[in-house]
Image 1: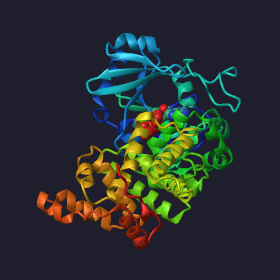
Image 2 (image 1 turned 30 degrees about the vertical axis):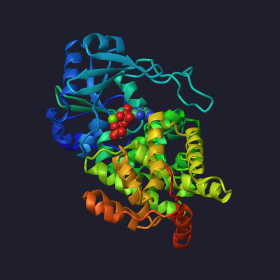
Image 3 (image 1 turned 180 degrees about the horizontal axis):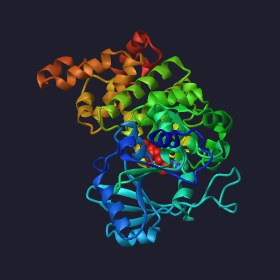
Length: 446
Ligand code: ATP
Ligand code: MG
């Protein structure tokens, strides 16, 4: 009996999903106290009002895989209006994909209504990408609409069972990322699923099923057709997943890195730029894994820095004045970027701030170092400087000097400061001393 049950749960055939497997807690291991209080409460309230309601998607998958979920989403057969009526602190959001945000204690839970199968007259663009998705359906239809089998799991906190239409629990235990339905069609409907495949496979250490993997290279260009803001959100998820190094390596292997960040492919092929980018990403991964915050501005500043450097070098070669040339280079790189990936205004301001601070770290005389220490973004600028030094772009001696200067008392600082020279002599000296290409950053008069 048990064997028959296990066979049903772990069977590999994914074509039928009429009858879901009902997997008991003994097999999946999620006791109700492992889901967040808010998601539990929301399921109870909805169920007591006569609706079906489950914790769904990434949270169930992560709990089974032994990872702490990032967030808990709920799926229900109640419409957004019905959900809205049951929870005082809630609001309906989204137009093309309407869901409800329910606030409970410190948590905000996304509650979505089961989606129906896509009809033939569904709203799509000329490549087949879904544009609107507000037709409600059954839980079985909803499961079929999800991207990968491991994401189509519904957990009922009331009886602690997992409802599994597509053998997601079995796939997860067998470490396979399997797409639901026809892989080509699913990527055409939403090309971001290709990026999700890479991110989830890396995060959960899954092998991407050959059927899901094969079309990626061929369809990679469809990402060019995804709205820039959506691509930015997904890239940010990927880069702050704590596995960015692994994800980007896999993106490159699958031919998906092109066009996501302008010339990321080129950057990754320049020895110095590549070293810098990987160091920055390793550093970010460590921070994420240690539970420290990471700033998107810092992250994108590192990814695009070598673009700025080479743009700036070209301008310097054309004898443009140093400081304005840097600002022109920064703007040009960010504008070029905006076409593909919509970096928000706030993040782009953060990026510019970090870049603009860099030349000021080279100035170690007069009042500049004191003013720099007081800058709100000193720490971010300094961390960036350090990465530049570790990658071999500038001398390590520069961040080391700043370490000493930041820790010193006023008297020691006076000793550390370099004597002021007239700008002409200083520049000549610097030119002679220059060893590595990036070392010639100007001393600014800001
Ligand atoms: P994580 O939260 O770790 O980033 P996730 O799988 O939970 O991963 P979400 O964006 O939170 O990702 O999505 C929640 C669920 O919604 C997914 O588990 C999946 O079932 C469904 N989903 C998300 N994006 C898509 C998509 N592009 N196509 C189909 N289903 C999707
Ligand atoms: Mg999630």
